[in-house]
Amino acid sequence: MRYAASREVMEAFAALVNSGIDDERIDLLSAALTFARIEYPDLDPSVYVPQVEDLARRVSARIQDPEDPADCIAALNHVLFQEEMFRGNSVDYYSREIRLLMTCWIVAWEFPSPWH
Image (cartoon, rainbow, N blue to C red; front, side, top):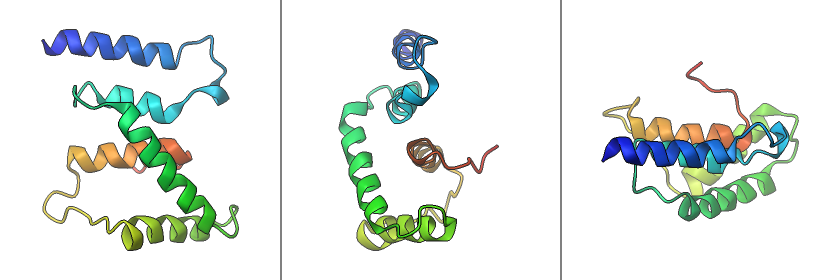
């Protein structure tokens, strides 16, 4: 069953990132969430895209200087940790769930990945 789900997911992912789409027009957030379905087959990207986009809008509204990485990080930290009360996983810092969340954020805002 997992193989069939993975094949379906890979086909959906391929459709989102195919070579006929200009790189700057690829929906990276939807692609990342679709790819995450390999590990989480019941994940529905359409549920999470609006939530991440809402968080992104709120973070963007707080950024005074988009060229200042410290300002961008401060805005992100404020929204995630002050407003949304996100907390780290002190027991398993490198858990798959945390990496999935971070990958979606990295993709959504094109931050450099800490796992490269």
